[in-house]
Amino acid sequence: MKVLNFGSLNIDYVYDVDDFVKKGETISSKDLNVFCGGKGLNQSVALARAGAEVYHAGMIGEDGKFLLDLLKEAGVNTDKVLIRDEIRTGNAIIQRDKSGDNCIILFAGANRSITKDYVDSVLSEFEKGDYIVLQNEISELPYIVENAHKIGMKIVLNPSPMDEKIRELNLDYVDYFLLNETETLKLSEMAEFDIKECMEKLINRFKGAGILITLGDKGSIYSGGNITVEQNAVKTKVVDTTAAGDTFAGYFVSGILAGKEMDTVIKEATVAASIAVSRIGAAPSIPEMREVEERYKSL
Image (tube, rainbow, N blue to C red):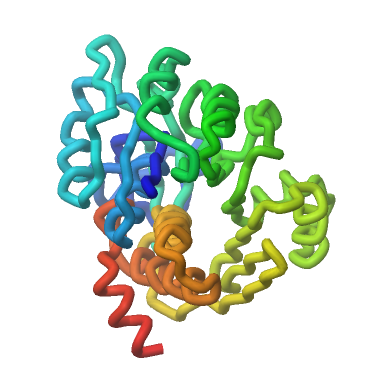
């Protein structure tokens, strides 16, 4: 059983600031670091470091070739990644404040150059029962979902960034939703965030799907297939939250692929995310499974 991550590949420009810039304001940054990033790349790295057999599909420009080096080093198969010479790699401008929180501006670049022909070529290598992981940072997402469903692949959706493009997807085809509080609120169409009410609405709307909601320092909750798991956050010193959700997502999917019990899957994903936020950077902060297992045993 294989997992395909059809997702974004970005170059992250991370600026360290005391506080996020405000309208009309000019501020100085304390430091600038350039990292490999993109939700797709981060999740592929997390999947691979968690032990999954993962294939990445997506597009980059000539300026992004170094992203492939990180993916390969992590154990990700990059044969399906297409390099375009006429467009820049997607990138992100990230402000990281003194508390470790961040705000992000995305430039899609090559990520929005995905074509139907390319999708067909990639999906032809996969079969019924394989998993596909998706985010909302690439083009042709509705076409990918439609055709992955036709094949019989298990579809995992992290609808980030959550915008109206998500409404274009046939969400009834999704097998697992990976959501934060903001995405949960928008998808459930609730006026205010109440975890129990939002979860109930999503379960009733997407019958048969697994719903995972991450709640930051309040932990996470999963419901699906008559299973409900609530998990507290693991306390740690927060340095950078950039890849926390992506780390959780990668470990969550890898755990399911490995056939682990859901409470174990979610606890390992929580531990992995807690390690990631204690380090600087996106992909570089994602831990190996051996680190997660060691920390898991100590809890």
